[in-house]
Image 1 (spheres, helix red, strand yellow):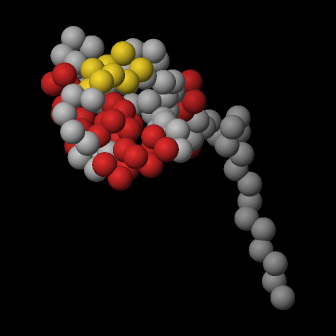
Image 2 (cartoon, one colour; image 1 turned 90 degrees about the vertical axis):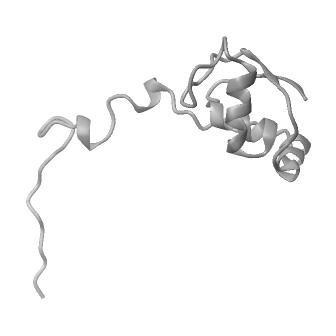
Image 3 (cartoon, rainbow, N blue to C red; image 1 turned 60 degrees about the vertical axis):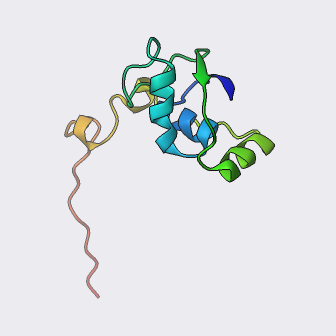
Length: 105
């Protein structure tokens, strides 16, 4: 098939979906790029050139992504998720405790 240049925010599963039309293609990516990829959870550096061989597992998905220039990028950056959510909130700093308000009729 050729090669893919990775984009910002792409996980290995995103690239497999783009190249093969299915996340099952991740195993082909790992086999074809042993020096650049080590695990399914890898998020390659943007601009990394990955070799893609084999046939599309779902040619309709590959065609749709190609026709509409869709580049999946679902990997969250650490800076986007660090320090957010209830696990990081501190009472009376980020998380304000208030008394419930009930209206009686």
